Length: 369
Image (cartoon, rainbow, N blue to C red; front, side, top):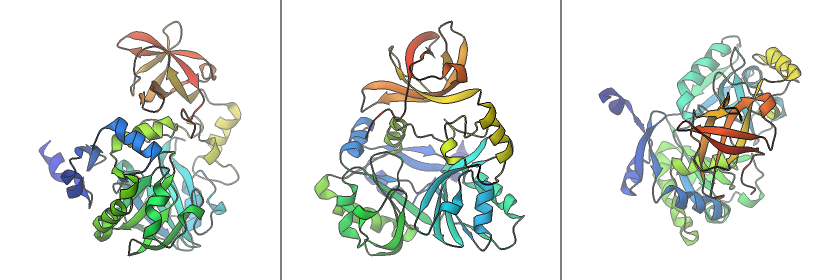
């Protein structure tokens, strides 16, 4: 335990989180703020106004060279040939058994430059995986930028209004999943990205660590008139779950295929990629289990790893994520169930303290924005 605390990483904004009274907790090898004023309050702030997340723990891997696209096409399930400079793509990296190494964002910086944004807990794993596959390509440079980049996610319907005074980039004209590089709050070469993990709209801004505090202070000064607030990781989780977004380590991992997880929309068989043949067969034959969303109709909150039962109390699956939705005021969750029990409207039961509690399978997202 002693070594764990010594080795834990801190973002460039760690001292600010402490000064603001953030409740800090170890997460993905970093000390991160889990909440400030309270999860429900922070959740509603993002849904209705604007909030700021420090997500500098996320990983950034730069792939450059003539073979950059060829490598990305090999390791990722989506078709990166559809990208153009300034465009972003959500994808996943299948492993050699058809599971998922990680899900990620691919930024096309230029014809030979791509930035991969990966999950914090998988930075080393992803680096090792990509580096191994890259041995088959000649003209490539791979650089791990994770320790020198800070990332702030400014999310909510008032995000553009809060940030516009800090940049000449026209934020209102930016389309979802696009980015621009330019001056932001006087900081040169910031990456301003119309992305986020909340479903509430907004932007993610990448800068060098040395500019992190300047960026944070400028954003809060600019957003003061809109009552901008710092938001912790707990609200990030409830926000993403209301949208039915997968969280790596919970809803997807090395043993779940993208097709089982409902990610066929980022699994393109118009090209060859790692395990594309076996995944194509899986698509043709049909999956045996599916990731579904469900709402509790009985009293109780579903939690990760709870069993999912049928009406005969036979195990048909497992809960992967669950919470009390601050927006809906009801408990919701996601989990894998057998394909034959996965239909919308099907009644299932969550094993909560060895008692069957009723739930119904519903279409995600749980919250319509």
